[in-house]
Length: 186
Image (tube, rainbow, N blue to C red; front, side, top):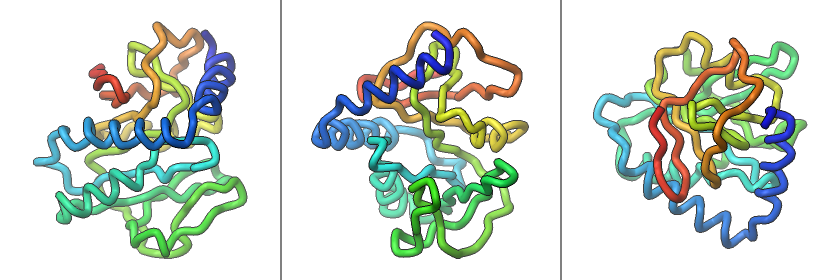
């Protein structure tokens, strides 16, 4: 399937989930995430969920990290839609967030993080067995991840497809993807 076909299919799949199913899947993703090796992780970039699109609830992962690994710095993205680039801001809690023009939660203010990022949790609509993902099509994460030496972890409520037909040179493969059923390593 092409990225455009996968986007349409994945959006319909998510719409078909009940709130209870999405919450259960998010808790299951947390269970798999909690089993990852955090021994050399100092900073984690976590995307903030768009609840209206039934994205995985990454606030569960943020809360778990804060409780079990308070030494790890959590950073969240803020998109610049004019340049199509993202910047990392130190997560200061839910009270410090506001929705942007596209209903995406972002830090309203806070400290810009310009240092290393050891792990990036990457949003997606779908992924394939080679670790390539399909997002919403704006390319923010592919640009962000280009040349970044970090552990790239996708979160998906659904398993992979065989292969995305139109992967190009700008697409960045994941290192692993966590689904409710299992963790895929690439």
